[in-house]
Length: 204
Ligand code: 5GP
Image (cartoon, rainbow, N blue to C red; front, side):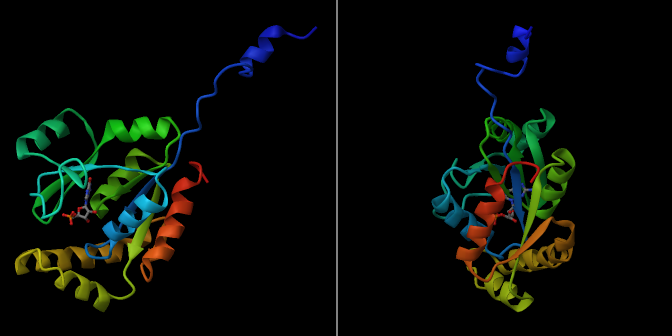
């Protein structure tokens, strides 16, 4: 005789928990065009949730608190580190940036793919904290093109640009640590590839 509890054990009639979604990390040197790709991806695939980082840097013109970043004080950032609220955090060009852990974990558990756009140090921390995460490196078409993009940005003083170039050199060399490299020759193509990678179920 069939055991009636077997059906229940198989989950018959129960609401199935969604399969956990994939956490994808997009990293790469400053100036490579990560934020342009992410802005394009936001329009192309509203299903993918883009984490909003906290930062101690001042807002740039046009940036709104809670949209590009949550802008916090040094002491607020310290408190978030001590309470374990950050999945990862890093110092970049004199400011601190971090990913709030809870919203990322909630989305993944409910089956929503999550994308983090963070620096190399942060990507390494995610690799350790979330072994199933997919690490994507966005590379420039060439070094000359990266220098052109970084020096063409007139919102930063020269010493900040110089510092960013130095960081970018170190970051370019780290591309081999990533699962996949996408070369940013076309925002459209990169966005298309990134949507496909991000929406794949975790573990594929
Ligand atoms: P920006 O000041 O130009 O917005 O960002 C500077 C760098 O910080 C970029 O390389 C960006 O990817 C990185 N970044 C932004 N948010 C985070 C974060 O939450 N964690 C880490 N580790 N880096 C971040």
